[in-house]
Image 1 (spheres, one colour):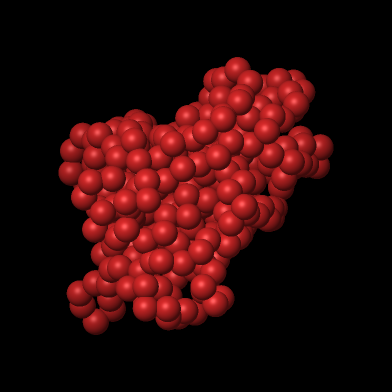
Image 2 (tube, rainbow, N blue to C red):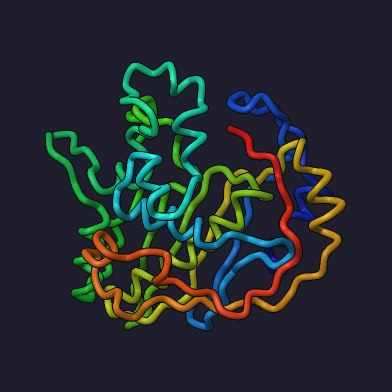
Length: 283
């Protein structure tokens, strides 16, 4: 919580205003932030200065691992985070590649699970990484990426947290995740949860101990219509003790994640929080 609140305060105190073309709003912005989550110690980074809906964040990352490209699939899993981008984004609605209602196009996990090869065919980046980690192989050249500049026009949104690099030292697995852009009041809490869960889950299914997850944000910002709530409400609240996340130990493979895992397989214990804050969302 301290590193989260420190970043929020840094943006309020030192941020510079930037016009955002996509949303038509100004953002109070800082460049570069580094956060760490001690997964080994079970320090689940769930924001306590407002109520956070962690299951939606976990559902989204599970959808990425499954390669979802449709908002209806994300909703069925337990998150509505892709509804607006799929159905309210004017540029995407006018895109001839859009297949209809709820279609998100070639986004996030759909890219990683079917990454095009220049010489034809595709690579399942996630399966390749998991297979190597299960065999104790630390391949520094393998990166789980959702980023494909040549395919941006094929999806409703460019990936924000776009790169995940797993590293194995002995029997401990580490994760470095990189995020190009972050809506701090709304998105960061989701992203913190997702980085933590990604390391915890991949360590579990590959048979390793989870270590530390390192989360780098390039552009961290607060939208102009969120600033007052952040400055005058959330930053005035005292953080509460962190909760604990429990993951169903029966999740043992990528196939399990792809087929039967639901949000009932994730439980947060002892979550104390302040009242919710309804931050505006920018499409």
